Length: 152
Length: 152
DNA sequence: AGAAATTAAATTGCGCGCAATTAATGTTGG
DNA sequence: CCAACATTAATTGCGCGCAATTTAATTTCT
Image (cartoon, rainbow over all chains, first blue to last red; front, side):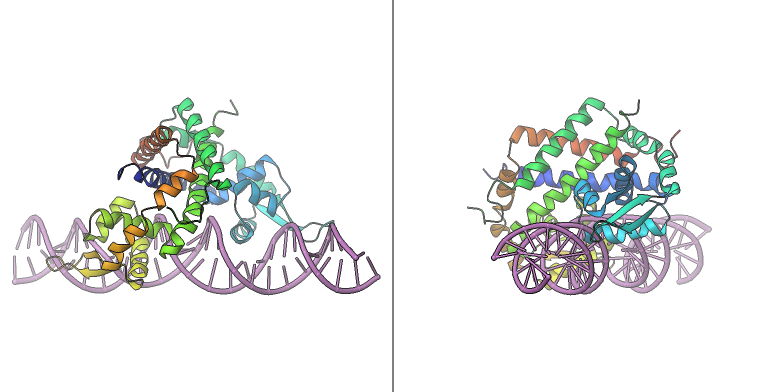
């Protein structure tokens, strides 16, 4: 009875330390590109579809404007993208890749390959892991378990 | 050929967003205890074994003194622990729980249960997930794949 | 049309996480 | 013994992540 409840903490720490190990592994790969890992995620989103609003990028990455605004300003200062107010809706800011930002995607092509290699890249296992993580993440988001209420 | 390499990025983002969802889920549970998630991790380590050095805590949690020193100072200011230089080796700082810090472990007993509940708590699945994450984390740490060298 | 509510982004403040450096203590080798 | 080296924490600087607030633009309701 005393050992079972700890398991969720152990999973959480495993995820926590795994994520930090990941961003550490990405660092040397992304440094030549002049990107941090969160900046790389934003570039991935834009490479997939250019011209998104801050809100759209935030929904994709689950980040808010408090995180994204300064991050996007840094990417703008690095000349990888531009930020312009939408003309039909002046509230939103539309983010466009520059030529340099678009070109970066080719230099970044090797990154996921190297990363997969560093992880051992057991492909089916990795796909299964990803699906479990996403399932649990979405379940946490719904918070169907009276979270916030003190435990019995 | 274009879809396979993206998989590692997808796993990384899954882990990244899962970890953030986790700390978000912990927040309302830990707030009544006056702890952040990293602070909770430090307390877990000390509840397991009191009187560890900063280095030992850091090895356990994979954090360095740049992160731990200010964090421990906050926990000291909250009267959950004390920090004293070791007498046989003045370089190291030994961290001891206060009575209040020890007592906190009882108030925190419900946290992993609530968390497990919020995740759906399919126990065997969670154990498997934890083991996979730790295996990949440790594999990344070894970096046996010429990481840091630009990809072909 | 005009007031109230809503939405989007920016701003502020705080706590990590980590690289790089510094300061102080210990250890080792000549 | 003492100089070179190693180890432990602390410090500095920067980039997230997020809660809370603010500002500006748009929508909605009457």
